[in-house]
Image (cartoon, rainbow, N blue to C red; front, side, top):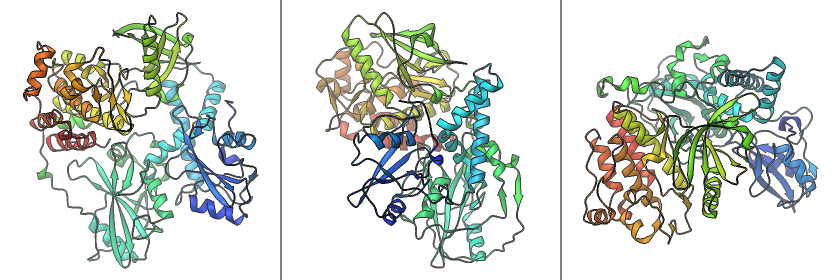
Length: 639
């Protein structure tokens, strides 16, 4: 794979952000000869593309997906540094396409690629450029790099070309705050008033924020849209994976992308968004200078720090009987339970003095010369784990190195399976796979992101003063990770507190996929060789049948929560496995730890139902965990 990279904007056959129908129309207007093609960016995800190519009077659309290592590829195809390089390759090689892209459908010379609608291209370009410079400077400082000005310019240019999509995603996260359709702190009544005063033309809209009823520091978003002389209100939901969507619609990485999509088509709304209502007070585009802030809620916490642009427009209140899809009740502070320890818990959930960006590291084979080994963190049946560092040209990034014993072929097979599986995972609550390394003595190693506080159970045993609020929130993160694995058709088979690693007291990550397997078409994995199983974390049905599925992992999740809320307690301590099976089949269960909330213990009991059909799926577990955190601690989790 060549490292030469060409920006899509530099080629005339790239049309920017257009949809399938628009691509079909453009190609049809050119006569649709075999091999006529264009390149376009996908609407749902910055940095992913589609190759649209004609063959026998039909347009075929090939998704070009962005990979974790920054490359792009068509499904089952080879990787390329960028979409232009992919197209150039297929001009010579069919390699899975229905025909070669041989006739470029170029844009007219005076037409630029389409970017995000309602956004001035030059402003967006400058915001991304500012973000690249800021993030690269931060990266240099965090890694204590000693770079000359010329060396630093080379690094910035590399980031600008190959990783521009990453910086676009960062900017997009908060870009809505400076857009002409966004109204901060606007409730439903005020939105109705503004829209009535301006005239209820079909398609006129605004996007507004309101304070959460449960947690005032958190903001929710709604679209207020005019149609047929009425105002309809649509809630924008935030998913567990930091995506945004309207009920039943596609998910987007940002509010701006969602608005851009619904401007192009109605797709479930009463009418497409067409004419934005500009607010009286609007954030300046200079907001981009602060776009490195991690979350929308943090942006709002710093709301007063931003430069404000005041527009000389005045609106007067008007009565409205318009239909509504969302109710915005005024916030009543008396309805919120105040706990002494909550305010501290709300601040900076993911704050860490050393946040290393593992996305910039390679996700492939690593040269042993680039690894530095420090102290041993632990060992198991297949080998040892070391704290180490991965060297690049100008930096050392902390990593964990899992070194496998090389005496048996079984261990080689296991590490290969684990590496292949982890390579496909990308979730904030799953330990990140960085690469594989082959030692000269024949042993295999997996290089992983370092969770510096170590296993959850050991940390809790040494920190009995850690608040139960933090612990319950960590359990929620584990549930999110397990829901993600279930959606990927994976069963972990070794979920326990020892395999939950802490990056900080606010961030947990599920690890150790040595026993994980993909489930078959019947949604389970079956094994006939028992080996060293963590039986105290398994349900009786899995022990008896050797069949593992989501519901066996749910049982393990319940035990893991018990370990966490008992501050590293040992489940069924002193009970041998034969007696344990009898106890479990007679309905005996682990007792409630003293500090465990009753609501969480009730969820554990659901996870330990004898009949696995009565156990909740992880989607339900996540929903109940979120409700527990919200109801007990007045924390509305936005991840």
